[in-house]
Image (cartoon, rainbow over all chains, first blue to last red; front, side, top):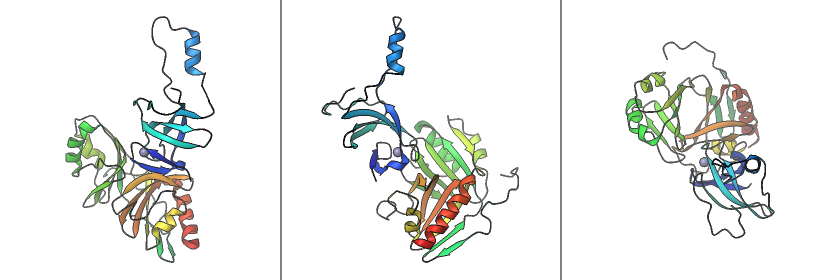
Length: 97
Length: 180
Ligand SMILES: [Zn+2]
């Protein structure tokens, strides 16, 4: 079984306790000149690349917390997980934030 | 709680005795779902009479009362004597949310040298003594149900699940006790 490291529980736990929650670091557009296209991008447009993605995950059947993860969609390997609110690690090769 | 309605225990009278494992319902208890930020913990701990644990997967026990860490701001408090837990927290001025879930959950005791093996039939977590020592507690999955596991002794776990899942969880453990 795939093990996912929860940054709040501090250990690797079975994937059955987790739920995927979409792309991470999607920032809500702010400002007076925000238009429909900005909101279209915010609400609907996702990168979905083949390779390394930054995603939100939730330890729903564990501590309940959302956190972020960098995962390789080719190998399904988790490269790193980090707490919600933390910046994406810059040293992940090929990652898009 | 004094004003609690009398209610049939859902697993009343049911018990499984397999090879090296016994599954039976836990005695009725009062339970509290407690959510609170770090700065409220001191006053809540004082009101509840135990130190709310802050380490993941840990618990604190004083007499018949226990607090299990479920998340960074969430605890399951179990009181075996029937004393009112929500009333104890109601006096606390510090910010918190305390919900009486005495009847939402039901408890099972899984004991015997093969208790971890039987739970592992439905729970994917590592329940070895090294990874899940005595006193460890965690919310996890048990088959298709969500449950909280708490290792109360080397050879004993308390399983807390929702009352509506109790029949399913019991039968899952019953089948596991037969097969493990
Ligand atoms: Zn967690």
